Amino acid sequence: MKKIVFWFAAFLMAGGAFFSASAQDFFQPPEEVQNVSVVPGNQSLSIIWDGAEDPDGVVTGYKLYYGTSSVQTPDDTYDDEIVLGNVTEYTLTGLNNNTEYFVALTAIDDEGNESETYSVEVPATPYSENTNTEKPRVLAILQPSNSQVVVEMSEPVLLTNEADAFILEQADTFEEVPIQEITVEANNVILTFEEGALMPDHNYRVIATSAVEDLDGNPVSSGITDMIEFTAQYISSPPPLPEGIDSPVSPENFDTPEVEEPETQEPELPPEPPEEPTHSAPQETPPVDTVPPLDAQDLTIDTSRLESENIVLLRWEPAIDADGDIVDQILYTRKGLESWDNGYSLGRNVSELELEVDFNENYEIKLTTIDEAGNESQGVTLSFSTHLAQTGPAEVGTVIALAILFFLGLVILGKRRAAY
Image (cartoon, rainbow, N blue to C red; front, side, top):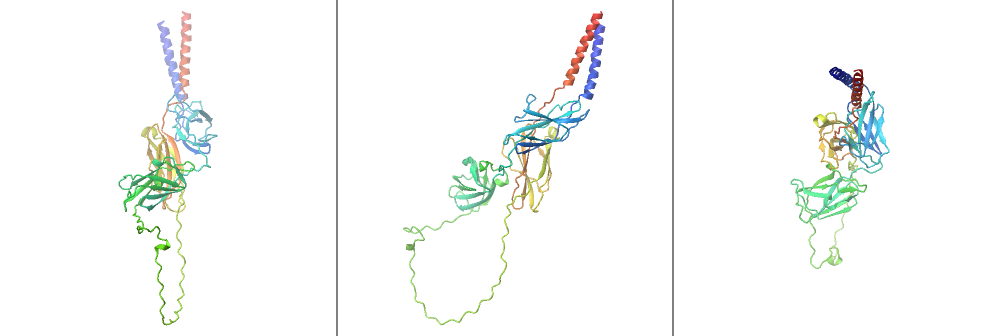
């Protein structure tokens, strides 16, 4: 009996070593798919990724997972999946506009093994190209009186929350000036406050918040185009009228002048003919530049350092300087549904940036271009996620191998018992 147990144990060890070596050689799954980026379009998402590697074979295809819910844990699943060939780009169509989708990929090798984990999940929202997506901007400000300023917007706007729509504050101390009333007239917004609230020759700042929207529902976004500074002036009012006089233009307010008889004067010599006037070319006022510059191109993200350093690398081609007046690039970021930050100045020639991020967050970035006149481009956007949920197919090969070993052991043990 001891011999039977010994040989059975030896068989299991030998078989385990064989199948372990076989699994090591033939059942290793492909590596995780890297650098997935998504560009939203009209009812579509264009997806691009880097080709994956396989330790013991060749990657022959990819599986695209997507849905309207984010995968956070190994128990979560995506709504749909598509098996693709050996390609590194694909366009999903027939999606719902203004609905957020979550996208991830795995690689498949020539043995049918699939990556053990999804790629970094990327969120994106399809939108209609025919819809106006340009956000309203603050263009100029005028102070008509000591208790009012008029803010000129780039297009007609409405207020979703009047109490939070505009902020008026001192530029140096950030002390807020209470606004008593806001009146909207197309693209002009009149802010009324208490008489004497503005101190002459002091600098003030007006900020439009996301509660200011255009007629298509696009809110003002946080950045350099949502605020404007001005220096308060003392606007002198006309002097009060004398008591009993209602209007300075009434005929009763003026005395009829006495007409004097003209004095007899010596005849004057005819005047000398005037000199020929010198004509000069009219001075043309240079046109005001209101055309925004072009956007940067090919904005991509490299997530290879995400897991080890919490760093993603952004790369792009700077905008073509068609008018020779581009002076800066601004990068805006936001997490999830938070508001955009105030933006970071990158300089006009930067084309690569390391961005430190937090795990398990959805991010959206926007890169804009600024010209000498202060015009800002619409911006190019990119969405990505730092969720590192572990998932993927189970190690089926290992489970099957152990089951076969166990079954063979039982058969051999039964035959030896029968022989005795």
